[in-house]
Length: 195
Image: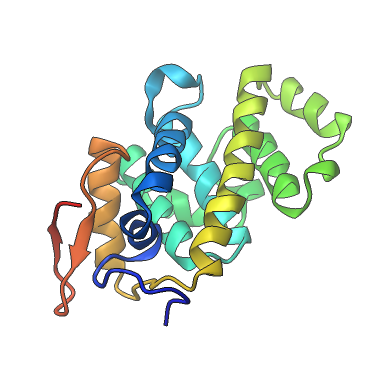
């Protein structure tokens, strides 16, 4: 049961955005810039979504980890197995050494930003990460700690049906974050609805 009266049928952060449109706008713009816009980072949208997914999984935020995992899957040509590998064991996942080094930084940010040491940065650079990619990784991880705490701190609804997350992931991967959210009916089917 959410801690505040949220609109029914909208899971996770989408219900919070419906509840508070004035804060939804800058939060949506931030996530659009961090994860979706191609010109804002040299990391691919799929790589950025993996950082968000991994951070959210470390925070045990079911809604965000499931949603961004589904988005990552669609950004990575439908490779859901790769997303699962990253969540379970990024060191042995079939990703670049650069992304592995960046995920190590993200994990430290998730714990405490002060745990990111010069050696972590140097190692990421050795693996080919640019300063902008290191910056973007830290910002994505920090932002997702905020998003995760926002979602869980107000006890939003996180559906159990993976098909719901898959539908959200497909839409967000294609359209980005500034589009109309889905409403989940009592039968579990999703329908787009206006704000």
